[in-house]
Amino acid sequence: MTADESGDANVLRSKRDATRYQILVQIAERQPAVSQQEVADAIGITSQAVSDYLQDLIKQGFVQKHGRGRYEVTKEGVDWLISHTSRLQEYVTHVSEEVIGQVEIETALATSDIEEGQAVSLSMHDGTLQATPGTTGSATAVAVTGATAGTDVGVTDFEGVLDYELGDVTIVSLPRVDNGGSRTADTDRVADLAVDADLLAVAGTEALATARAADHEPDLRFGTADAVREAATRGLDVLLLAVETDLAGHTDRLREDNVSYEIVDAAE
Image (cartoon, rainbow, N blue to C red; front, side, top):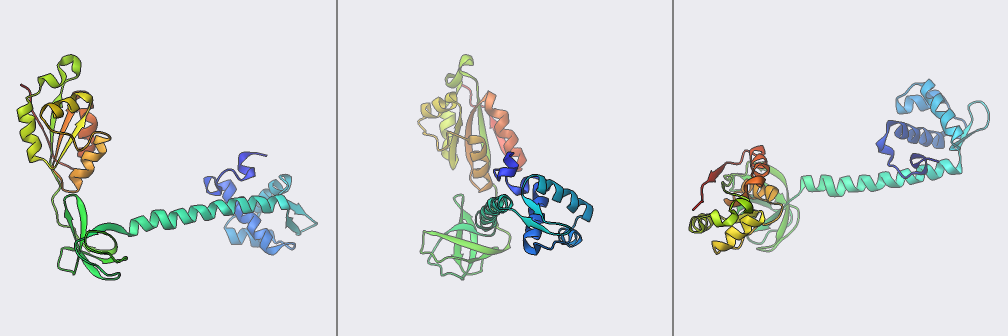
């Protein structure tokens, strides 16, 4: 018996398994007197296709034939159905609770006490979505949970446009260590740039050394291509110190989201 037949594979992975599943369900509902045409009409295929699938299911031991037009799902067929039905149920639960739920509900920080069902205005502050009781803002929603000031609140039923500006990214490109690394940087210039930014990100050990030489500890050290883009799209200004070999990976991500950036010279 193959992996597909044993139930190790999800029934949605192939049209063949999906059709076998539907035919077995139809037989189980109608057995023992089963009309191939009724099965075909129910699942939207031809009666000849049903006949071909039935022959295959009989050979696999999932269906037993008891004469003309009389079929029964075997224990093996029932086990196969149960296995795939369980997997389908898990998948549906995942989609409904973890996928659709996340799409429909966002999380915000409550600026003051909010009651479940209350209308709120949405704003972006310090890179975080915030919810304020009332509908005076350009974007509004409805709270699906209650919250006290400073705690997380679920919001849905969005209307309007969230009014805020994307952040700017300033990039200092640094050579690799064999070409001078952090020793080529004007640390006073880097320190001044860091003061003006909301976040300091570093990509590469040379960049980390430069930040520390400028007496600044970075806020972001790992996964910076995505982190810098995410921060900027949430309205934060970011200073990125990056080794020149890592530069393209960061600028490509920024261009994808139309985030403005400037590469500046901070060499001594």
